[in-house]
Length: 60
Image 1 (cartoon, rainbow, N blue to C red):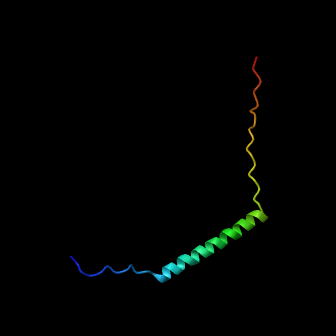
Image 2: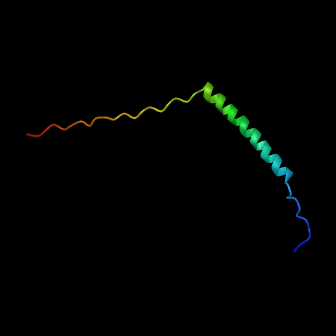
Image 3: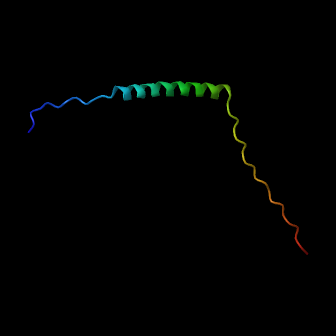
């Protein structure tokens, strides 16, 4: 067996910073998107209407 103590995991500080910045920018983007949706709501899509088929007159 090994008598060496287990070393602590290496933390990539640059990756941690990128992750935090991404989270900050994502939160700001969601706020801006919500503000735009509130100020300029998209119109609801029109409901499809069913058209009645014209019947051909019966031949005599």
